[in-house]
Image (tube, rainbow, N blue to C red; front, side, top):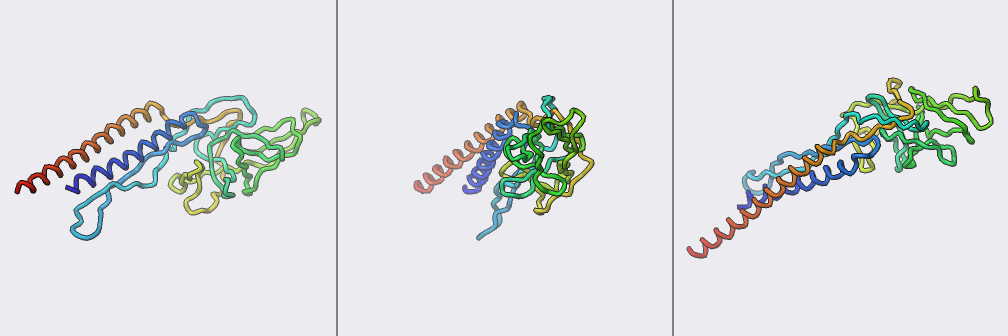
Length: 248
């Protein structure tokens, strides 16, 4: 009897994990540069005393949907979207180098170029980008090079600064962390790539499809209800079995 109960229980647990993941995707349908997560689980043989007759569902590290999101024109000079494949390099809260498609940038009071969430943007050397202050104009070229003009300078003045580090890693070489940023699986820094092109004055939207996520949630809810019914049937069968033993 435990065969049925164990299979139903492990299946219901994985359905709950999937519901949480899909709900998180849906909550980030409007998050700039968000990459939708994909749930993964597989059948795993349970080993122990006795015959290997039990199989349960085991969670695997989820993958991501790397399809590009829609490009939304904003006209803001410090908004930047990645055209096609590629990532912007930033300094994560733990000090490590990480990669994002979140291109809503700003300049801090210290002159650091940051994302609107406060992460420092890195240059080709892997160092935080510092721009001179006070600024009158800051432009981002399509290759990531910054052009700045200070207050009081002539309209034809200004100078080029550092280049934003852009990278082009293989999808299977990076993984998503709990902070939503991507990093190389081996912990190394990805080399800068000149192949990545940027679009100034635009942001990339989330690649989450809200309708598809809602459909998945409905399907997962029905699966969960089926697993609960299986557990209920297992309980009823167990009670019937116990009753037969008492009669005997």
